[in-house]
Structures are given as C-alpha cells and as structure tokens.
Length: 312
Image 1 (cartoon, rainbow, N blue to C red):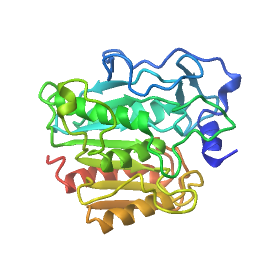
Image 2: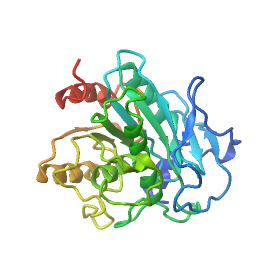
Image 3: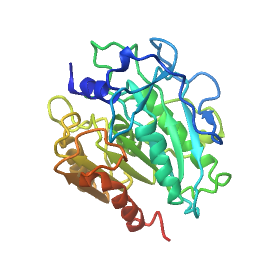
Image 4: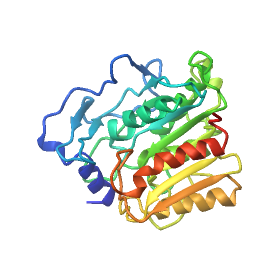
C-alpha cells in the first residue's frame, strides 16, 4: 500500500469496520451552498452515495470526521466572530483526493480564522476523482491537474469575490489555505488562475480565481514520482505570496514537497515564508500538542500582518 493510502487509513483509523454516519453538516446557523447551479462539470461516477465516518483512532486526543463520495460540491460561509478585518480564506481540507477531513482540516480551521476577524469559506470539493479502488492510485499523477477539484476551487474563489460586498469582504484580500491534497490544490489555484477549466456559467465566472495569498500545510503532489517539480504548478511572478509549513519527519508527503515549491516561488520572485520542523509527521491540523509545529497558526497570524492582509 502506498504511503498516501496508509496515511488515509490512519486518518480515518481504517474505519471500514465502523458504521457510516450521516452526511456531514455544518453547525447550526450555517448552511452549505452548492457552488454549481446544477450538475458540476466533468462529473465522475461515484462508488456510492455520499456519507461520513467518525474515526476510531484519535488525533491529539480527538476523533476525526471523514466525508466520502462527494459529487455535489458545496461551500459554507463562517462570518467573523470578532472585528471584521475584511479578509477571507477559502479552506480546503485534505484526504488524499479520496476523502475530506471535514473537522480536522476544515471546521476547526474556520473556528480559528473567524476568531481573528477573518471570514472562512469551507469548501467541500469532489472526491474521489474517479471510482474508488484501494488497489489503484486515484490521486493526480505527475503531469495531471486535479481537474474536478480545481474546478470547484476556482468556482468558489470566484463566488467569494462576486459576493464580497454582500459578505463584507475586501475582494483584494481573499486567500486559500489547504492541507495535504488540499495544499496541492492551494498551489494549483495559485498558479493556474488563467487556465480556463470550465465554461462560464453566470456573472460570478467573470471574476478572477486568483487567490491574493496562500497557505499550504504539509502539501503533497508537488514533486513527481521521479523527483522533479510538478510542471502542473506553473509558478510565475503573479503567484500570490505563500506561507508553507511541514515537518521533516513527514513520511507521507515528504519535506521535498514544500522545499521544491519554496525554491520555485523564490526563483519567480514571489514573497514566500517557509517553516520546517523536526517533528510533527502528517495530518496534525490545528490540534495543539507538545510539538512546536502545532503553534504554526501563530506564525500565520504574524505573516498575514507582514504581507498587509490584516492591518489591525
């Protein structure tokens, strides 16, 4: 079994023996909104209906919730709980392009962002990209875009920008934050915003899908199987300022992922900040432990002020 599959199994603690729970729903007062007015473009067949599972295993003394078979992507808007900074972040959970870690790398991130006056838009994107099979590698490969997931990400960024005035957001302060596979989507969205992936549907699609800033936490898929930087991530001077964090003992998405992306960003003259830690592994989310790496949100707080996204 490949490392990404092992990590996925660990994340949901091999919950095949557990009964499936209901489909993920946001907390009271928040509503999932479909991002496509009808069937999503390039929709792939799913191995079954959408469902969620709660892990048997624990991450930082808590269970994790995994959503499966997402064919109808949605976004959920979480408004700031403190003074509104005008900034917004589209949060992209990870899960190996097979599941979505909806609390560990989703709602818990929104709780942090909204407490700091930042609007959080949680994206539930399509997974898996093709019929699920434990014996196949269903991730994007060396020179493939994760097209359905990236379509969902681009559409969400455009919708947030289109509704910026309504949601009290500065349209020039809309970023992305993702984990693992979601971190790869952060890189794809940051470098493919001029790449038309679907036919425009409505006025929202006239908006730019370029993020104004980007945070990638233990990102994957940025280096090909032969150790070459993924050409599907065409870094240019127009790539937004980027923050990277990863652990040196991450044996799922190795530290070369962040290192290679950082080098490409610097060569292109893109402002970038990278933090590497000796320990932390993979899929720690925002859950605090004794390991210093779990203080990474504090570094993002400082970085957002450094690049002028947050000014108070």
